Image 1: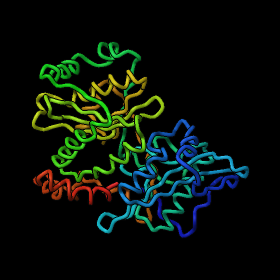
Image 2: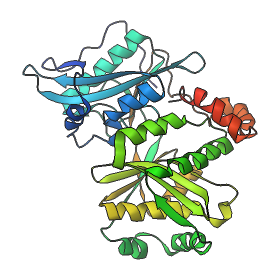
Image 3: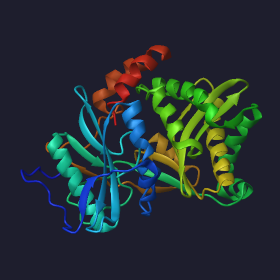
Image 4: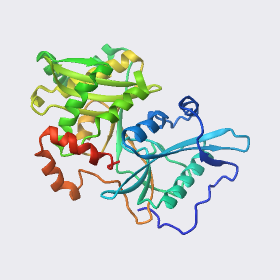
Length: 356
């Protein structure tokens, strides 16, 4: 549980570092992402995504010493709504974030984030770190994990040795049905068509189409849109991003109508094969809840769990951002599943922007 809020501002533990708003362009910010803890979620392009596509307030922070040398950075976004609450998150709608840099910078940035959260009066500060931030005063919430698989340099080796025979047989099923995988920025339309329908089927409001438009514009070839086709019909699709040697599949969907033909298996295999061709050495399946159906699906590929030690602070003891899968939203979820896709796609984006 988060520690009770104190009335006094939090002092950074290193007096040698000053945390201030970043002043500079995307290239200058991304050049600072040399820490081993940095992920694609820390890139400057997300500032435009959250401001332009979702209308959220952002705080891009940098920790510098007396000589103005940068030692760490922290991107923050405020997601506020009357219905769901007020949150300060790094990074919302994504799986990672949090302060990156040397230990002193991480401590100073985390402390400043808590100060900002207190000044704004947010319900919850959540830093979605992938690694423990040393000596942080914030509490740790490990409710989520991510699942990763190491990739060989050769697609043949991945097929023969990297996945089990049972999984290979499931991949062959959609191949025998004549399904094929396509990649490219032009697959955004197919992706959103499949993804939005999947979200409706799950009873979850879908993110706005513009969210993905801006992602495509900001990240270019680093974002991969993928779709599996049965004839001219997209039946499974995904959107993911690459950073350094790792690729993560962040959003995905698959047609319920064609579920028995397993298009999702071909989707994941096609993406892994493409990642090997592009030189990625780690395939990240994205976050999930431990022991969930999604977790079991990801584990069958011979992958490994990586706990996510997210850091939190809340003045009221709140322990999570709104979760559409929770008991509280169960009735709303059932009602949402009955909506026509067209209606869900009009209403959903207005709601989803407040569910970080």
